[in-house]
Image (cartoon, rainbow, N blue to C red; front, side, top):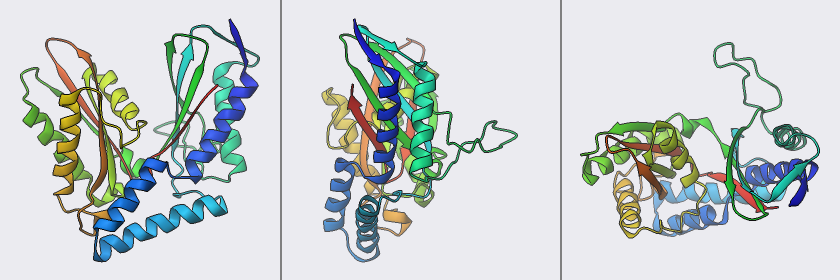
Length: 279
């Protein structure tokens, strides 16, 4: 049994939250640069601003976006790992708190959805845990702003729904998000499971690099077609028009019940911020 001190978890959570807030993922930055070469006029100028913004943020250690989001933590915990020290949840929360205090990132979390008093620490984070084989722990932090999160949708399709009906729903979600979700967008799509599982799949889909397709060929084809269809909408960067409404579409699936077909779409802005490491 491998022992991991939760002090190490706290330090790693803090580091990953800081990294995600300051540096665009390589796959995202590469996609923006590719789009820049294809665009013209206002769309090209806007993408140039995004590229310059990412450069300045990394150099000056400033947040990529003023909405430094709600923190979501994904843990893949090896079954041969034993955590020692302070409680794991406490350590993760402390790591988030440390990063937001040290980085002087905006604190955006309220303690109650109705009373809405700011916690002042950008905590608590949302924590998802999965038990996996062996003695390693994979930690992924996801910084989710709500300009895009608010545009996400879920639909419970009948099991008889066609692939075209599902595609049209996803396309409609992207179109309705429009300029308010800070395009170019990245779409995470979850299919199958239950109401809750589909939403989680959509969220996890955004952690996958956008230049890596789903391993199932029929899903990979759907990802490619959706990206092409969404970019035909002409919304473009910041809603100014152009060829690049979305940078990527990632789909994750899971077995589901014979009587249903849940489909969730989690919208993310161009600054799809995540960072991961293995302990």
